[in-house]
Length: 123
Image (cartoon, rainbow, N blue to C red):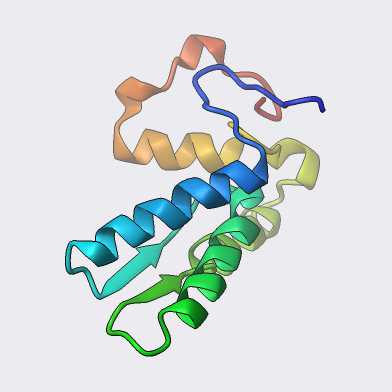
């Protein structure tokens, strides 16, 4: 199986990513957390978080703990649509480390962007 690796990332096949989430949530619930929220900013992680939330909520249906998957944070924030309305294209927006990711990090703390390494389309 080929694993996509990007500098600075820890790459896990989805089944292992889901196990990490599952055990983290179970640990939080064990320590008394009743509302565990999963929010992700990577498209590839959305399905895994949703799967884990569904499985644990079914398993925990009689207890106080719940997992809340907030997929809207990634999918419905309108940023992609806004960029398109400003005249950008899917190609100029790019994907990983494209306009969307880079501009958000520039707004938070520009020291974390190597502006001398910026390339059209990201990646």
